[in-house]
Length: 335
Image (tube, rainbow, N blue to C red; front, side):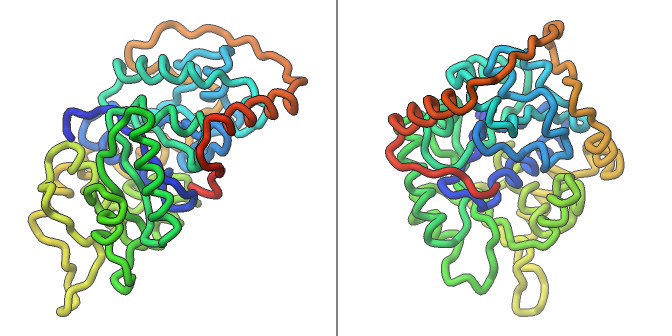
């Protein structure tokens, strides 16, 4: 899996921790010296900006796909080694996007960064299926809840129809008392388990703080799980090990295998990047109105902001087009 550099992070159901996974995986990968860009390709229900304290009204992927901005103008440096391209939150911007332009955007980013993480919207539409075929592999995110598992199974089929491949499953919000284990989930989905991320109150705290969990609380169980996930993708952790971060053994100690835990901490240690204070400061000081130069970027140009008096009709046309391409409908209700 270490040869893959563009990952789509997807789920059939909203609210399972997909954006949280994208942000923390990207931050962990950047923590060991990689150049990483996370891209919100959820064009209809974007929320990445809030997770990393970006101005939701700044230049976004909507503007790029609408032809009024360059990729560079929509790219924001969050901290050392990690950039983000948010999607717009206004429906007017969604109405004007040319989704097919995403292909060239991803191809461009592939050449500029070590890792490209595409935060894909939930549900079924042209906008959600396209990124699945552009990525080297899709990482599925699911909880142990039956509805989430069933929707993840449908997403496996969508990935195949898009010409992509599934790289594995991230099972989130796991608890020792759950009647369904992470292994049960991946057996039903038909793909390998990458990591089980435990239920962790620090996750919600980090979201409200607008700071990645691996920076906000790097020693928390879920943060350690996300660092282990990064180690898996980097080829620096044993694929046969499935540690349980935060699970308790009979003696009250952590049941995570010591060697696997050490592999995760050594491979992707938060201290290898900027300190937590430096990263938090860098994220909070980003000016949402100004894009930044990304590696090897061409000179910026000033976008022409077009009026949008055709929102309702354009939206109706796009939604109808998406419905024709869909086999099952749905919009995300959360990240």
